Image (cartoon, rainbow, N blue to C red):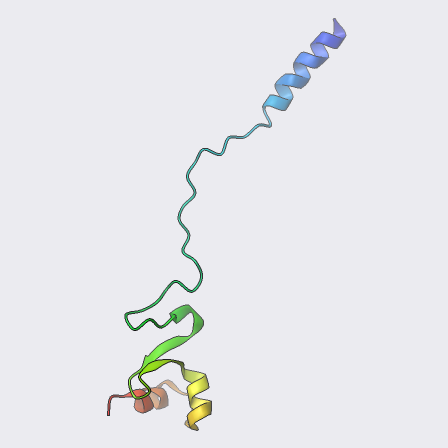
Length: 81
């Protein structure tokens, strides 16, 4: 009798550990899937530069082109000429 009670109690306790995952998982966007209208990936630091006609990282462009790494200098360089 004790053995049967123990098995029944153990069965009830173990059945409480079962979890069901029938819930739908939310669609998480993939990293790098945040492209703007030009195709630039903002989360990777890319923005559109009109004068270069391509997506660039402002700090890399500043180093490459030799201008100060500031927003104003970047805007002046990438402004439509």
